[in-house]
Image (tube, rainbow, N blue to C red):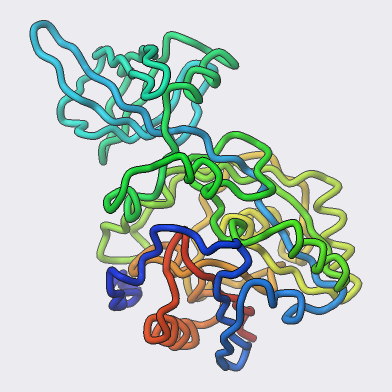
Length: 354
């Protein structure tokens, strides 16, 4: 498959810069298994699910992963932005640096807190490809976590950050109501649409809610640069599914309920933890699963997700689930009907193609 097979035209005005208010007022395009399209709102979700269905949410919390500082080398200095994307140890993080060409191994970077004015020091331990660096910080463990929270900014996706600065509203808007485990540098954005009122209505409908954790990395925003899909390498991300959650999901499926993931992060972790027979197992480790058309889904029946970028791994994933032609028709309808795209945009409800 060619990456160009997953391209489509998207007018820039379709990119949402702020979320809908209230959250469940966002639009929801229901795509039926036969390819039919129905326009709804997220608040209509209970009517689109059945008693016994199980929703799976990612409870990760976004950290203030974007740091701004200066590299000083002798008489010269340079402004550096670093976006943390994977913790490697108590005092070490992998990050994407800009401009990376101004760095070399051994450089010291001092990051300045925008609000506090304090300093956070790190040494460039290693340079990789694509602007990736390994940073060794002067602080460690919980002290480093607190320092990052004090010095960093919310890491808005590049397609939003390029059009407006991060502000105080984003501190709330870019976290789901379930955010618990501070480990991610990107939000599981399908979960942004949920409110306590909507969750209460889903429970009253007989739809159960279950939680796992996938630490979303900045690699989720990296463009696919290869010509062929098979040549793209996914960044590994750590995920956790507890024994209780695995047991509950297996029981729901055995009772005839459908497993509906809220977001591609939940789907990728579930499909990483299921065996050939369809049994979901507890999971604690890394996954770099890359789901493209032709993949055989073992556990997931449906997916609620936002509208994704052209040529992205996430667009490939939804094509794999619902069928490429069905998804193309759905996206063409979304563009023509002024649906809002990407992290702060509207949502779709897709079912696995038979």
